[in-house]
Image (cartoon, rainbow, N blue to C red; front, top):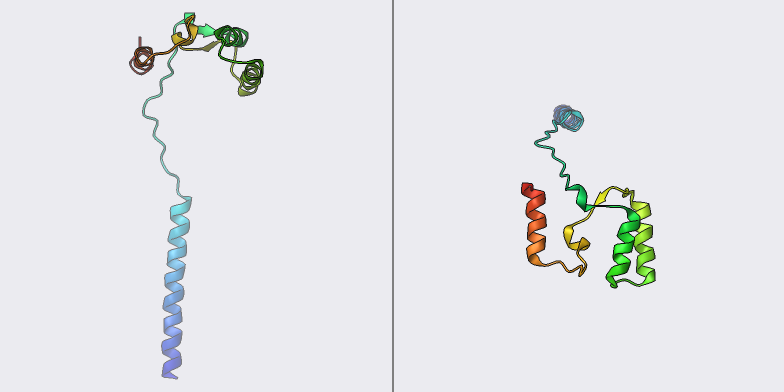
Length: 116
């Protein structure tokens, strides 16, 4: 009889601990977590860097670096991605030789990060 009481007492304690852990788990999983928006800024380049999809494909064609299959693939990507006709491209792509250097990349990155 005493052994059964000890076993019953242990089961009650175990059930209490399990219930407490379950309740705490449900509480921590269901509580709302705060979301902090630190700083939201959108960079808008100069309008001279704006290009339409057709102009972009024409620039790629004039560069001589892509065959027709690559140009068709780029055109499909432009259509599927949702890029509009007022998309901006880097100055290096506009240049006739279409050759980007570290200096141009650094200038582009610093313009985007720190502003013009």
